[in-house]
Amino acid sequence: AASRDAGGHLALLLALAQPPDNHEIKAVCDLYGPTDLISILPPTMRDQATNAVAELLGGPVNQKLELAREGSPVTYASKDCPPVLIYQGAQDKLVPLSQSIELNERLKAAGAQSTLIIYPDKGHAFGLNDQALQDVKRFFDQALKNN
Image (cartoon, rainbow, N blue to C red; front, side, top):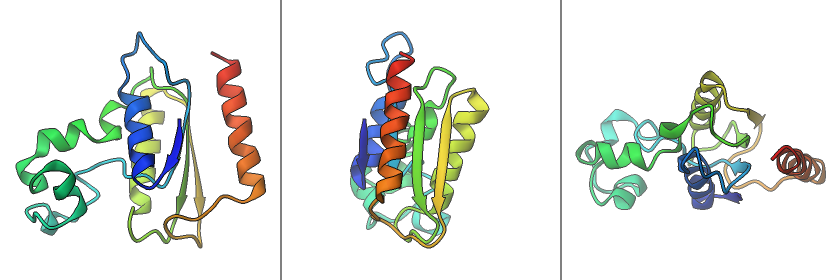
């Protein structure tokens, strides 16, 4: 699975939340997707209903904590997760770098294969250059060969 923007979040969720005994998704590449629907918002915004996360959940995050956890890819970090390749811009104002760092650290701590590539000067929704696209292809080729 591979995607970006809201698709990055959904691709991660599909890949990481799949049952351990039924891994249909063998690898996932995330381009700057939200990974934790709670920590993505500053505490002062978690009671507000006028942000993208609250709109997704159907109410303020603090009133929908269980749903926010269930909708957060980091919740499903385990040794059974398929390999994950993450691209993130350090200057991203929509999805903070901390989201990708958190996911990468949780996956590695759980024993899963995860690689985080940070672009120091990029914001959100940047395109991958030819070299990065070749790296993504190599990542999927390797992951699929091993499964």
